[in-house]
Length: 153
Image (tube, rainbow, N blue to C red):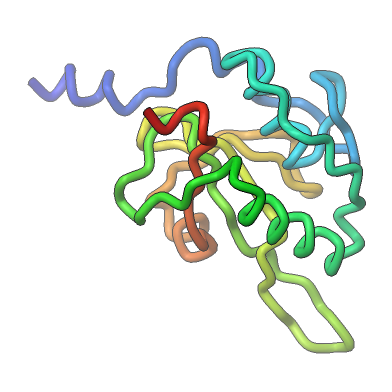
């Protein structure tokens, strides 16, 4: 029994294509991507869903926040209750940024839920990577989950 539970917690093998992609602000390919570029890439290649480009620099915090608000209200995304997330939901996360000398934690980061245990995401400090959802360094930053309308059924 322990072995089968352990296997269920392992990410699927297809994910290896997306782990280790170098970070690049506004990157939108398997060669270089930012967090949204990685989400777009996975949705296109794995689900054949074209997501908007949102050609926004991660350094333009207000524009990133505006893009997230637009995505929430355009009808393409449905908010998912915490604990009800599933594979290919998009996880919205905060990122610590210093604004006018004060640390703030705005919603500036996204990742893709893989299985129920993992988030695939890309941050400037690392290449794209898998993180466990319940790791406190990740779970403390999660603001919510969103499901694309094409996956809602």
